[in-house]
Length: 267
Image (cartoon, rainbow, N blue to C red; front, top):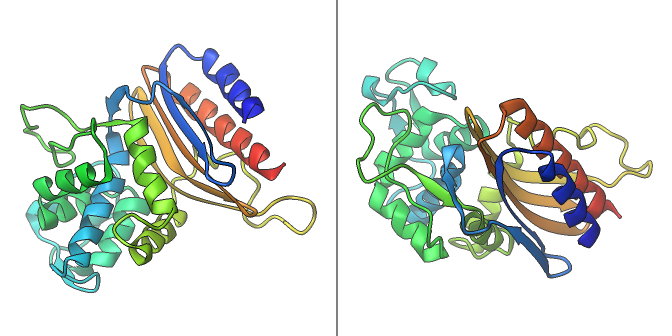
């Protein structure tokens, strides 16, 4: 992993921003971290532990993924996502709402799910995973944020969550597999996977096939991408958080980090 770490250090040395990175090669048992316990504004990465809390509630028998929720006028919030443009009264399954929260980063979907399980339940789920520093105080895109603070994450906390998911121990083996499959369908691909070979490439012609189960997060000046790389038979957890950097620069560096991880896992 030394060559990969050296390449990533070179990339972030070009940045005026602050970066936190945790990489764990689950195939070789090697791990590297930078600023792993530093807190960052969570942005939409908080949607991954929210998803885990919903699956926890399903596991407890509180509801089923196939249960339907009807959209109400008061559910709609702005920012990313398409549900805000749907007709009031539309019914969607909880499974579909989770899918939209993750692959479209839908804020309306996120708030519906927070209301479904409750903020306290999400926080409890985060604590059970060992996310000691991260916090959820607020629903998204709300005008009156909680005076206690804003949603925060650390790279180490997200890496713990992803590792449990990757080894089949987040909620249950079945739930872990379902969550990974949702994250593999991610539609926002302009960070870690931006420079990876096209999924339509001829992988029989010397390139290694890959999948990435991941979730981005972005507000101006803050950009994250976190996920699990599957390259050939190898598996690596990558949590990359950044702040106080130009948005185009952070996007470029994240894409080059993703390329470096792919090249490392392909060799």
